[in-house]
Amino acid sequence: MFNERLLESSEFYTKRYQNFTTLIIFPTLILLVLLILLACLTHKETVIKSTGEIAPIKILRTIQSTSNNPIIKNELLTKKEITAGDILIQYQNTESDTNLQLQKSSLKNLQEHVQALIIYKDSIKQNQNLFTDDDNFGCSTSYQSYLSQRRSLSTDHQQQVNDQDRVKQQKIIISEAINKKNSELSQYQDLINAIIKNTSLSPKNAYYSTFLDYQHQTKELPISQVDKLKKETVTSIQQQIDSINDALTSYKTQYAGFSSTNLAEDALTNKLNELKSQQLASITKELETLNQEIEQTKIQHAATETSGKNTIIATESGTVNLLINKTKLTSIPQGTNIAQIYPNLKKLLT
Image (cartoon, rainbow, N blue to C red; front, side, top):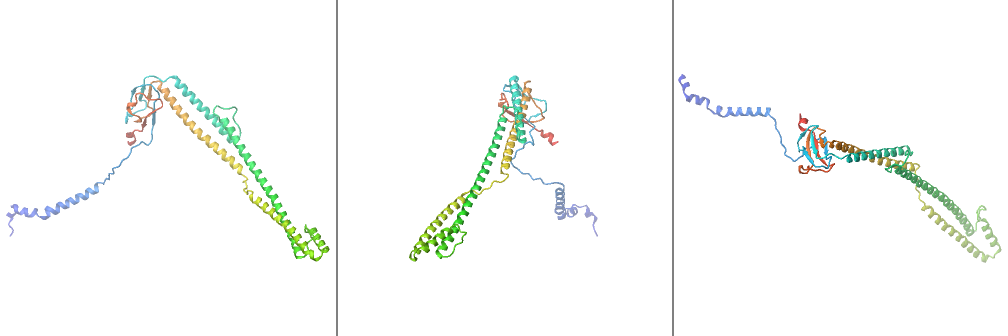
């Protein structure tokens, strides 16, 4: 029978609970379950180390120096957050009225130039001189030059047409001469064949009278002299044939030397349209440049007016990025880019 007092001994519990199963398998199983749960509840992150640059999507504003005067207060610091209306730079003295007048004069000059270019552009489009007087920018002169180029193209084209017509006429004349020489050559060949072979000759032959004279002479001469007369006549006719062949060779050489190029019917129209397109493209490009200068001048004028209060005030909220060293901010030439205002990164992330 089982002795119940054995349950109270440590030996019993040691054998029961400190065996291989409780000490190795169970802890290993528990650890495996924990690892599975951990893999299910967590995610893997991959970290890549590389060199890069963080740049803003856009630049809100570029701050320029509006005065050559010494700076007595400078609030521009890299990575400093600013809000619209903050005083960024304060100068020792105000801008003179001379700069404002110069900027106004420059702006007016640019705008007048734009108006002259617009008239120039419309004149080309409408094929009509819309200038009432000479301008100060040479646009009316440029339009006259454009008209001169059109006239030159028309003159050159007409000269080419005349040359082509002259060539055609000369080719017709030479072609007729070649046909005439070929006809003469054919009739001389018939004549010489008739004499050599003692056959008849068609009365329609241009040299039929020569053939009759030869026959008349042969009838009056003794038989011994007929062969001599035949040889002399054949030699004379052969000389005429050789002369005709030389003339034919010369005519054919001249005919081959003429240019066979033909002008297209719309060649002049295409050239004029190409010239017109080039001029309009050039004017459009110049207008774009002038409009950019006008906008830049307006910005500078507005900045100069603001600097009349000895200050540059932020017009945008964001983060400052200096473009020049801090040590150089005590005095900066007018128009120099000092800093840029980037969007506030914290606000973009929220």
